[in-house]
Length: 81
Image (cartoon, rainbow, N blue to C red; front, side):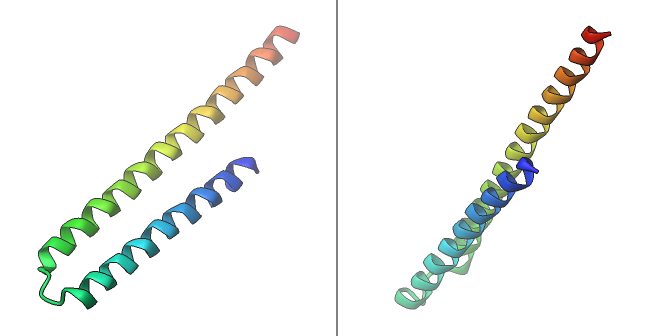
């Protein structure tokens, strides 16, 4: 269950980044109403890509840890026989 705790923490970090992004976009729209939407879409797309890539990397790290643990357990069982 340790994996789920780690994923929960990462999820909170991603939610915080998205909330921060929404606040920045709202501030830009309030103080610069003529700011081009295409520029905002570029910023949003870039940050969403970053979050997606970071999530994929974190998932691969957790998977690698799990596989290493299972391999070690299997080797220990084989050495005990």
